[in-house]
Amino acid sequence: MKVIINFLNEELARKYSEWPKIIETTLSKGAECQEIPPEAELGVTLGDDEYLQMLNREYRNIDRPTDVLSFALNEGEEDSSDEEMLLGDIVISVDRVLSQAQEYGHSETRELAYLAIHGLMHIMGYDHEKPEDKKEMRVAEEEVLRALGITREDIHDV
Image 1 (tube, rainbow, N blue to C red):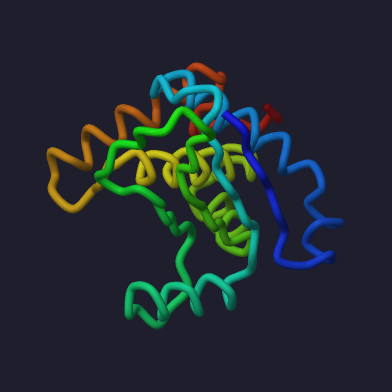
Image 2: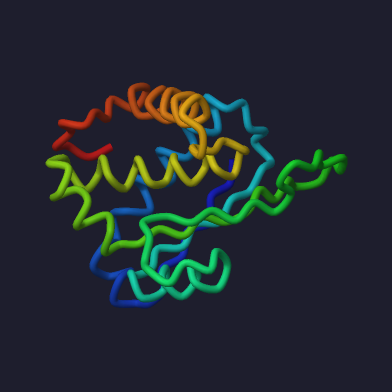
């Protein structure tokens, strides 16, 4: 799977220049586990809380920042073309990666990897509105993180 990673601004790109490797490694393993074809393409943007709040307000009518948003391009549709398969976009809040890693007591690497795979699972149609759906989504997420050797106690890089 081709992963295109962008930063909201140059300051974030300089400060977190090692993060694209973590995201790409995580999403590649996620694509393997979910049997996503190699020609598939996914965009990832790293922004700040202000940017995520604006998107959350615009697309979900929720006026507060969030950690990750997913925008599936063909939600529920089968792509019948043999050309590249555009899956959609994931937007991750750098601010939330940092604060949630500290709050949950694990590494920034683990939090970033979790949010990336969480976003991918939403793109793939997983949800967590009902308890049984949440459990199914968590199992799929943890399968990818375990395959990468990333645990909640993780303190090393991918």
